[in-house]
Length: 139
Image (tube, rainbow, N blue to C red; front, side, top):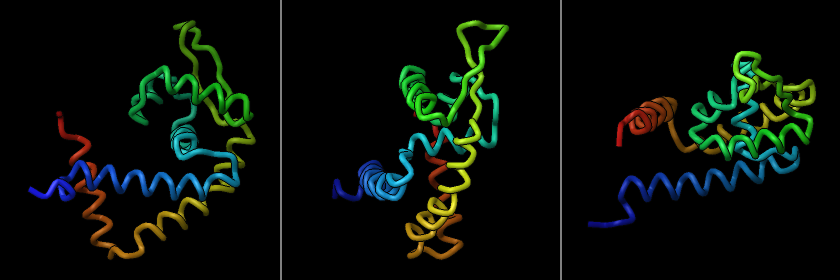
């Protein structure tokens, strides 16, 4: 068996390469790929709780708390207390966070196009479908 053709190895290798590429592309904007994922979610789902956000980006809550604290210090995210559960916060993009999203979105779109430039539209759709199917599998 060729271990370099195992799906886990191929996905990990691709993830590392893409993460490094996106990190370089986002560095001038002082945003990490993980922070970009939070910005994207909060743009679509304003008022998300830290717990919901952790589930959406598949990270543990402790990691998300640290990420949010960093983004609050940068002025990208604001927290408001959940009156029903004082231990919980609702998260919102600030004006600066919204502006960063508008500024960085074309960069992310161009990077996506660059990464998928060797694939046809059908192959991109097939890859999205297969990766979502793998992600949805219980293991």
